[in-house]
Image (cartoon, rainbow, N blue to C red; front, side, top):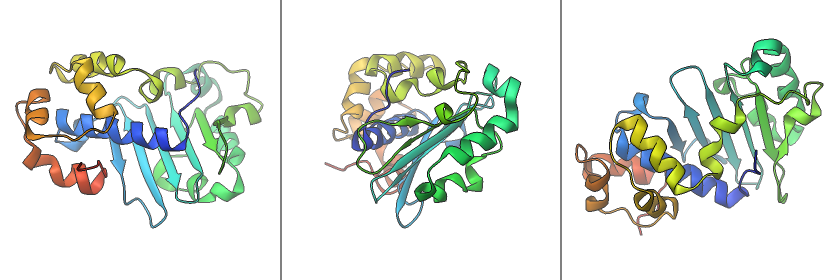
Length: 211
């Protein structure tokens, strides 16, 4: 897959995906993307879950490092190596990122791929390469991380199909750029909700900029 975005751009994309999914599905359990701007005193956390067993979690520490792990449950990597691969990936995360690698909420027992971005690094490191399973190409990561590197049009097509609401590339691009979200913007995307209904989560939980 193409490289994941650098630290600041990755947070921006994760906030945008969470904001779009919030508008499309105010009910949390029906969304793909979420963002917790208050995960810990020093970290924010982004996540994806598709309701069918695939998921990923990403943490961004205020020291400047970030890490991501996920599971493609139908991938050959997981089917063939299971928890052996999971343990190897967990051990491949640098010690300075121990808060990420030991977090029970991230379901480390079920992992097919992981990445980390050390403080000051320009590119993410694929943790799979540090394991004996480095040659395993099918981990599920290409599909599950596609919207982190894809275009607004990619997300617009995905969201239109999933939520059965018309999302245009222009709408997605507006929010990918973290431009202000007006009441009109919300109802154009989802006539069944309103800015008033979602604004607390949008601004306080996700941390989407008000202006």
